[in-house]
Image 1 (spheres, rainbow, N blue to C red):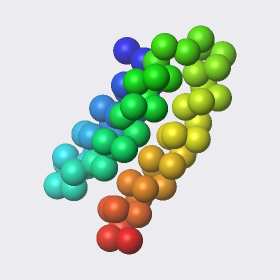
Image 2: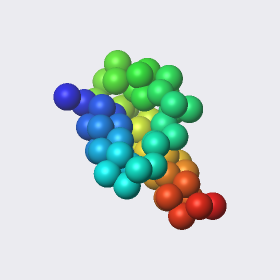
Image 3: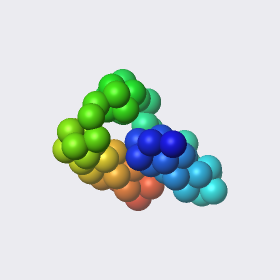
Image 4: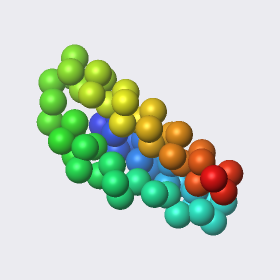
Length: 64
């Protein structure tokens, strides 16, 4: 399982436990493309998507 898939699963699990649907649909295309990159480039490309996804998720959880 790739890093991106694990991240999506963990965020989904976290949000399901709290009754909040994860708003990750907007990142789906980026995450699918990152999977096919070479490992050394994958981490570089995944970092900003992960960061923004976490910030957006935290904002949604806090009602902001």
